Image (tube, rainbow, N blue to C red; front, side):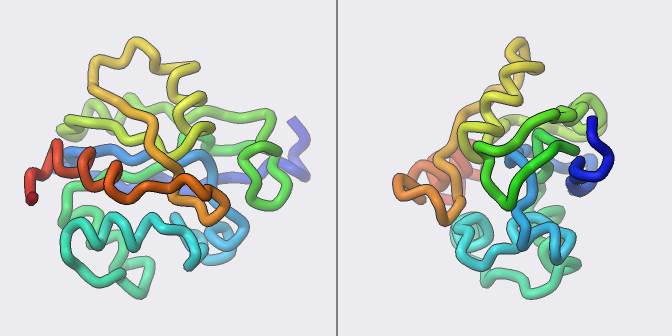
Length: 163
């Protein structure tokens, strides 16, 4: 591991009431600049998840954290550290995979949504025997031309049953 190029992710956001766990791959450059998840305004994550609940996108990191906890959403990335060029998942190497045991132990996770292919692949490499239902979701990244918000709404609705 090259300490100079190894980048660190963020700690998880969750509490004892978290019901759904959303796992991304690794924070983008813009997210690393603001030190919180999905910092690129072009990323569809906040628009999709807040939209599902009929809420405006929170402006501050603290308000986003409060939204997640109020809505019983746990959020983390599968890579807690890695080497990465820019924001491209395709450049990720030397990954340290997240230890999800504390989230599973301390919360009430009913479903895991894996935001994109790399998150899904990293999850499966360590947690393929997970008994909590999990699903690969279309990435909310602006680089994904095949994003489908209705898939996110359906999977969120499996847990929250708003619609």
